[in-house]
Length: 207
Image 1 (tube, helix red, strand yellow):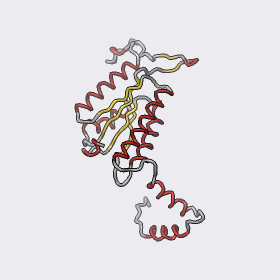
Image 2 (spheres, helix red, strand yellow):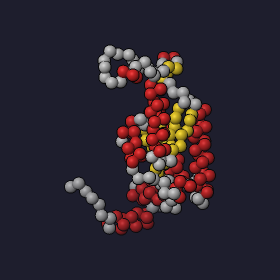
Image 3 (spheres, one colour):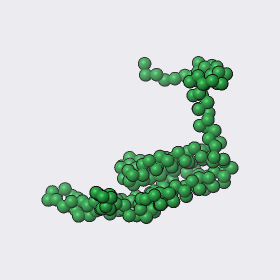
Image 4 (tube, helix red, strand yellow):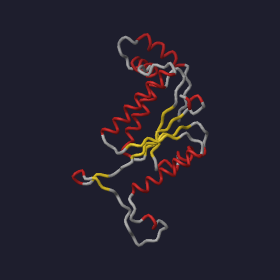
């Protein structure tokens, strides 16, 4: 809320593994539906790093100063081999001189960690408010812990702005319109009003 009052209107949840893409979608739904009300609220979105570092990362670094970058850093990230055995993926040694020889033999988690540290420093020094969640590893306990903390923070933050985080008036508006347009019983009067409005709506068409 303090950052919001200081014109930081967008919060991007930055995940560093495809495994967390669905969780990032849940997070945007949580804050969008619970906190975005009465013409107020931070706009929640997410970025998939390191892929988006070369696109959205450029905007984070040099674009308008209205973004908060919140990162999830998995301290001990690993892949699962056969029989659910934990394993680290290593960059193979090869005889080709391609300028990346210095990476040979290192595991991908080390490269990712360096990319994260470089990004955190760059964004912070660039004036981007940067928050880093450090999760020991990806399992049910720590994901649940993180989700609960965000749900609690979302509710408390909304109440601090006199917002009810447990309703969804904006969602109800379009649901009522959909029911009327689909011919649901009891929405005849609302359908008549919608048809009148639709006659006055200007649209852009491709043909």
